[in-house]
Length: 350
Image 1 (cartoon, rainbow, N blue to C red):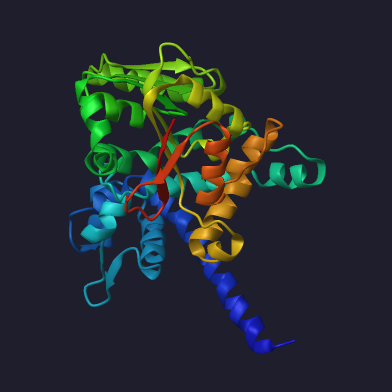
Image 2: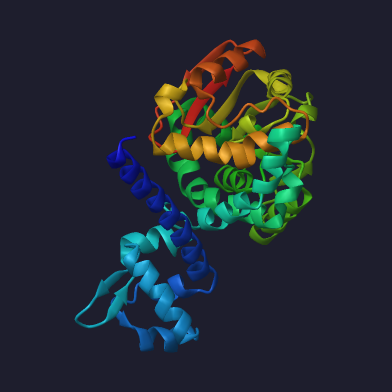
């Protein structure tokens, strides 16, 4: 046994443990409003932070120390002050920022609650159902995906398809499958008031959030329907169907893709957005791949398998995505030139 390799792995493992613990502390800081209190304030001493936040000073001392030791806060030993820099605040304190990552600190604890069920399923089969994750996961997914969606969907992503933008501006019929809490549906409705956007999802809690937001924002051209993507209406046909990080979660992705093909107009577009992954494990041997396979094990794949599904998994890659779409009857499959570290974007057409 190579003791140096043992020590190297021990160091790697303790780094993983540190990150997991620090993520939990960051979620506490977010839930209590501490990060919002620190944002834009510059260097602040413990007493001033306690006064501004109204939080218990003993807890504050420990949490601020953890965040400083973890590099999330800047600590000045001379003045004994803590600072949340603007760059970090954009990622953790500003939910309107396209760089916001705070949803992940809420989502990871939800994933951990799936561990007993996934361990059981590994022995007995089946999986952990979407319902078992509860409303916490619904909110976390929305918070993780929404900031970038609101800012980038109509400003960066859709402009790679100018013909589609023109059609949306003129008025199109759009189906947004697996819409969740409806951020993508609402963003499209707001940007293209002449188009009719319908968000489809099976989760009543998520859809209620979407309907409330549409009413609050006065978006009459946005509607939500509780319906499986397998039952997407065929008539009248859709000019655009979108699926943002949905297909890999489905129990029967092949059935859904065929249904989308049937529901799409002959000159329509299917915008497929899936996790950015290579086509093989060898291409995914990096931290991003580790995240994809881990989230897939604890959420994406197990949700599919809980329904007796295929369990496609999050890291299935562009070659398999194309094969699935062509098997469903699509003739054209093209990866779009969208710079994004997390997702791959595909234009799929009849």
